[in-house]
Length: 354
Image 1 (cartoon, helix red, strand yellow):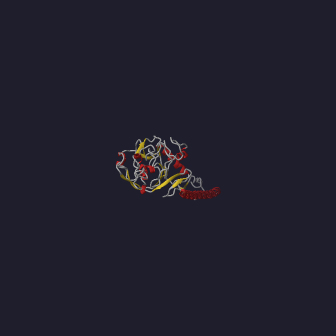
Image 2 (image 1 turned 120 degrees about the horizontal axis):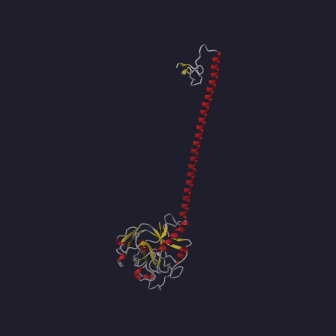
Image 3 (image 1 turned 90 degrees about the vertical axis):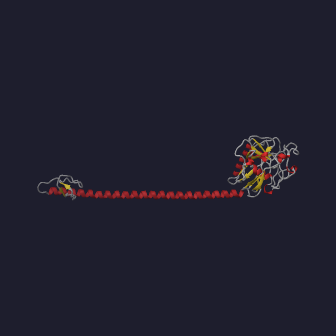
């Protein structure tokens, strides 16, 4: 087919007898001269094509405008989202800052009410007294006792701690546990017939109580003393004068035992204290320790902060009692019993460490 120029839209690729792809003019072949009717039809088609072109321009312009508007809307939404995220991040920062300030204020408040480092203290309301004990080293064990007290070996306690000035009394035990067991009666008498498990529960309850009251720093807890801590304290700590019993070589000055007890416990603190100001570290009632008992533990004990055997069937207790001979009241003597066991000559004393 022959290419022609479309008379309506000037499309140079139009063909005779084929509708123009641009303006849809039929481009039918004309025989003879082109008359007025033909030119009138072409003129009318040009007007229609012109209107279509204008409409197309308007449509294209409108589409472009719509795209611009959509783009601006999307940008506004993105800006809004970024602003919201920035605002939320700032709010989170402020909230975190307030929480940190609150924690610091709470910690400062707690520190102001905490147990004073390096000083003795008394638990309010309960009235339980504690003595501050400085860290130090001592010779643990004895060559004068049974084989489980040998060999004598140097032990270092690297941390300061507090220990009860007296054995836990019946009234103190009742205040925390709700009842006080024991064969002998008297609010100031040491509590007895308490198992190792009972004593651990007492420590846990007291710790929770004092944490709620804001009087314990994080990580601090009331517990049973280790065997090493109890012997260190019984021997006078870093103020030791190497007495046989806790506070004296003369047992009647410092202990209730079988020759002077009248076969009963006595109110705590009636005998003389030892070098650290602790009472009844010898006699009155035996005292539970936190450690598992091992008769051969001293042969491979840690030299620093020993905590007893890793496992066992019995827990250690120390100090002798109202019902024992003087030899059992020596500072180095060791006893043991099942953690669930209890009898009328066995009580405990508390320790507080970090």
